Length: 312
Image (cartoon, rainbow, N blue to C red; front, side, top):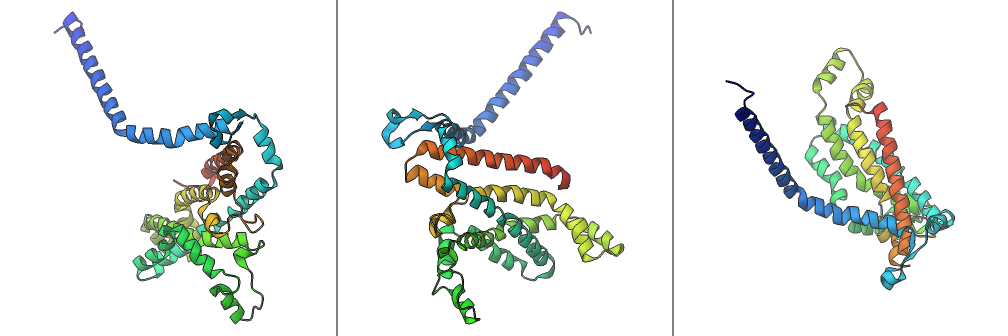
């Protein structure tokens, strides 16, 4: 049979058209299935981000409508450099980043203890996970009672053991941010603990058995097996944790409203206060833009650095 005949060439063309038509139908079906998600992401995420970038170069009060829209150029960003409240909020956010390594270390230690040394593992998992899934408003109110300067259980206990003048906690500018950080650590331990336990259970037992045969100590096994094998898990928790610290809002809104004396003001709280209390949408958008690029740069640096310490 001559494969170069006109009929054979026509058959090939028909087959190619059918394959192309089938691929087009499959592509269309795929887009139809993901279109609800794509539409939602576009309307609720991408368009607001684009609008924020545009508004950051404007001086606009949305109550006045589009008639009050005025271009301000780089004025908003120049004002941020000299805005003492914004700079203090930025500094507080930088200090708040310290909560991430603290609760990662605590979560890892607890995960190792619960995974190997403790009975009723399910009970402890639920007990530590409860603060994370509980309402932040309820948790904040409970800690507000615990940290009450005079009648709170924490200060009552400190006075009972001989400390006559205990800290005022969230009512004291020197301790307010530390108090919020302590609450954030307490809330965050549960989620990181569960993820670390899952990571520990995925480590091959053969590695520990080989280390036991070689006479390795517990510290050597932890340093040479556990930490390297958990590095992808740690990398994931580190990125999500740092991003979440830049988004902290609910604890501040319930506990301190940025006070006392702006000692707990964060960028998101100051942004909210500027946009919805003072109605300076353009200025608030410039803060959101700065926050976006801060998170983007930190995440980018982490992705570069992970090549040196993350083992896949």
